[in-house]
Image 1 (tube, rainbow, N blue to C red):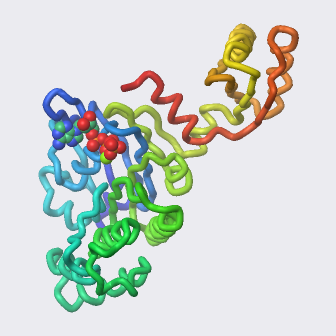
Image 2 (cartoon, helix red, strand yellow; image 1 turned 90 degrees about the vertical axis):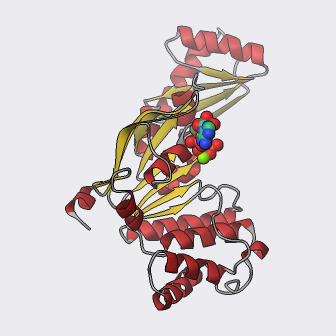
Image 3 (spheres, protein in one colour; image 1 turned 60 degrees about the vertical axis):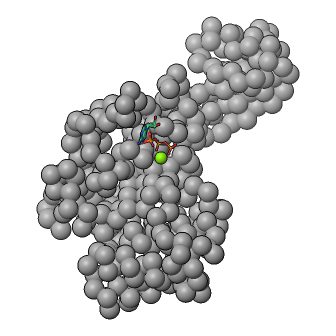
Length: 314
Ligand SMILES: Nc1ncnc2c1ncn2[C@@H]1O[C@H](COP(=O)(O)OP(=O)(O)OP(=O)(O)O)[C@@H](O)[C@H]1O
Ligand SMILES: [Mg+2]
C-alpha cells in the first residue's frame, strides 16, 4: 500500500447526489482512518447505500469527491476496484451455482487465476463455516448462509478496504454474531471496514468511529463513547401513573432547568453529572407532581443519541 493508505483509507468530501427531485446526498463529508471500522448509521432513505455505491464505483456523484487510499473513485475507478471489497445490501451471489462455484468464478473474474481462486475459495468457505454446504446450490442456502457467502466473495482478493452495506440485516442472532466476529478479525488483520447499519447496537460493538447520517448529511460523529457522553452520561427513566401526570411532571422539570422528554406515561431526563443527579430530579418534583411509580437509571444507548440527533428530520 502507498503512504496515503497508511493514515486515511477513505476520504469523502462534499458528496452530492440527486435522483430526479430526491436529494439523496447533500454535501456529505467524513474520513475513515486506515485499519479502523467506521459505522455509517442512518434511518431508511438517509443515503447509506448511495454513499457506499459511490465509494465502490457503482454510482457517480453529482458533485464532491471521494478517494480510497488516495485514488479518486471517479477518475481512478478501475484501480479503486482493485483495492476494495464490497458486499451489498442484497446478496449478489448466483443462486444457481454452488457456494464453491460462486467463489471460484468471482476469483477468476478478479484475475486471481484458476488454481489460486480455488485455494482461496476453499479457505474462505472454511472461515465462514460453509465447508459442509460448499457444493450445494446457493438457492438451497438460508439467508444467513447467503450473506456469509456474499461476504466471502467480497474478501476473495484480500481487499485492504471493505464496504459492507447492512451486512447483518435479516440475520438471526447467531449469524449476526458470527458476522461480527468476522468483521473484528478482519479489522485486527488491518482491513479498513466501512459498514452501514440501522442497528445501533451493531455500531456500538464494532465501530471505532460512528458517522450518523440523516437526509444525506452528517448529523453527528464520534466514537460510540463520545456520542453517548455528549448526550449525557446517564438517563433517568421515570414512569408515571398516566400520560397527563407525566405531562405535569415534564413541565415541572422543564421549569426546574432540566430537559425532559415525555413518551406516553414515561419521562426521560438526561444527566451529565452521573446518577447522583437523581436526587435533584426527585426533589424538583416533590410536592409539584405525583411521585413516579417507577424510576430506572441507565446508560444512554446509541439509539438515544441517534433519536436526539435526527429529531425533526425527514
Ligand atoms: N436509483 C434510484 N432512483 C431514485 N431514487 C433513489 C435511487 N436510489 C436511491 N434513491 C433515493 O435516495 C434516497 C437515499 O437512498 P439510499 O438507498 O441511499 O438510502 P439508505 O440509507 O440506504 O436506506 P435503507 O436504510 O432503506 O437501505 C432515498 O430517498 C431513495 O429513495
Ligand atoms: Mg440502503
